[in-house]
Length: 75
Image (cartoon, rainbow, N blue to C red; front, side, top):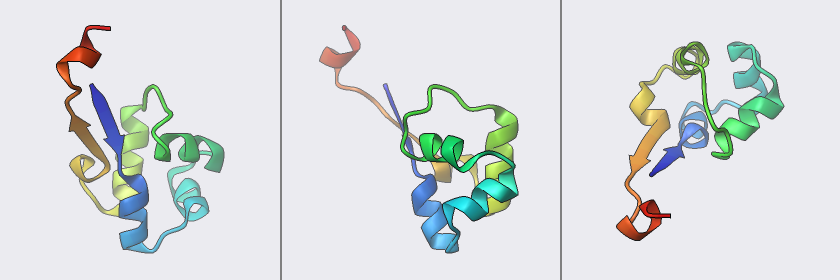
């Protein structure tokens, strides 16, 4: 299973910088960067809600599910 994080795409559409979004969401730029690059293991619903509010978008614009090939799921 792969969850693709598209925050950078939505940020670009809104012409918003990482630092500006981090300030609006009230998280550190480092933590936002971890989330943006897909390296985060989890996200709080409150943080996700704040990101959606700041970017004026829906969760589905930020997160995308891409099924893994069957051979990867067996490992």
